[in-house]
Image (cartoon, rainbow, N blue to C red):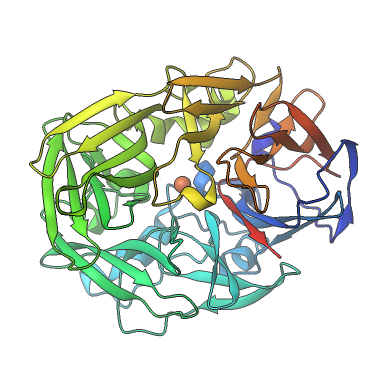
Length: 463
Ligand SMILES: [Fe+2]
């Protein structure tokens, strides 16, 4: 499938031809990240998550779109260009031994710098993010500017690529440190700094793979699923990659830790039947401040089969058809520990987002990929209040992560557009879709100069 074929061409500020219209008020840049090269020499990486990072920028002004794409010039990139792919999620043992070598006192950790998961703007700079603490800076032309270094003394072995932008300013995230006691670490990065301030450290006997957390105005929600990292196996010479270290322990429940942002204390620790999740959509407080329930919307999978289904051997063979569906579920976590779950949408959904002004606050709408269409990935808008959904999809069109952009000055949550790149696998052509965020009807599409491999996450940055 062309979505998993390498793209070599790089272009700079290419003006795209537009069919339909892009609204004049749309001003800013959608910056996205994702893998775009899957080989080093003749060797193909084994997992989608191991492709080389390429950042892509879509600049909007006066109804026009300009497009730039650039590989990050990292050590991983140089190695791959020299014929040596350096995966870390699933590919090859070299990367893994680098990551976990310190456990055997073999030397300092040197994880991959292939930051292909997400982007953020920290302390005035664009940063490409991944789940090990080697992030890469780049400028507005997408030129690589070297490694991003936090100006603090905290040391984490893993860190989230999903920093949550806090409407109160700054970002909130989480990390993981291994040791005699393994700990989840929750932190904030104050606005205009590159310094983490730790909010809480939560010890665990068997650390889970946690891809994102929930952040409300007053609380953080850490969802510890039964997908555990077998830290000791990291020392085995037979371990091939991070993927090999993950094991879904069916004997465990999923635990929710609700942490006060103000005090760092765990205010509620409670469990639900097991599931796996990559993506927390949003969280918000519901009730008076003293006895808030915390609401968490997330995309839940029955178990960890989704991780294996995203291996390139599977994707090359059957695309996303073998991937089990994620379900949009709302968890209500009461202060007394009671948990209730409600499914909000019956279809499969992934890469979910809420409008930026609603993050950490009560939201009504969730936008995401509709994943269970045969021969396509559609787009879905879920109305969580009325439990209804709009969908937009067409055959052969695989839509990537949608980002909703509100019309400036509008107080209406879904007044604006939804932006998402999409790949027409029959025509082997990529477009950028601009949809009406209220109705999901198409307003315009811009044609890209080449088919772009499927990416992961991005953000819209206002000018
Ligand atoms: Fe993600």
